[in-house]
Image 1 (spheres, one colour):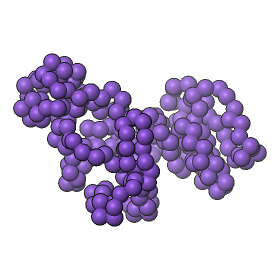
Image 2 (cartoon, one colour):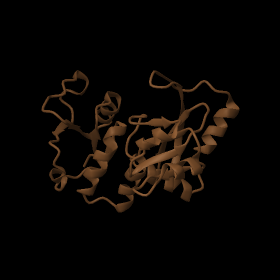
Image 3 (tube, helix red, strand yellow):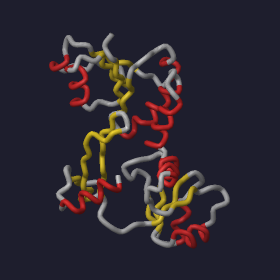
Image 4 (cartoon, one colour):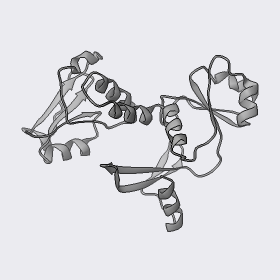
Length: 220
């Protein structure tokens, strides 16, 4: 039997590659439409219309579930909860989209991260000021791409920090992202992206000197 893959989101290169390699390829769709693409016509490709009810996945089985966008990671996690996957697989999804879980995992493994506080009902502006100092970054623990992020410069702006949100110490410097492909616990290859202009331009691969590249790969 061929391996089956469920993709969430439509990154065409990934879908085309899966089909060309002979996998049974499924794509989760959020509206009723047919994906007309000549490259995969008449091949093993199917769309699954998702109406928001995760119970539909109880009797389904896939060898892999791959979220193709950051927004689709929580959806993949909820699908896994309704299928017979190992608990460790769920945890991997959790630390990929829950920033608090991710930070706690990093601390456990002695990975350097900025100071942070998980805000609760008892957290006061004075506590945030004392432990983090200005500016303070406030963000949702389950968001991505800086959506909903604010940077507080004054005490009055700390009102944005609601329970279950993260408050972090601001770090001034150049921002890079290291993306790695990992197979059976081994890093096959890595790429470094330069967040050149926030919300405008990313440079991939980053144009950096070999020494800086080595340091970033080591941190990763």
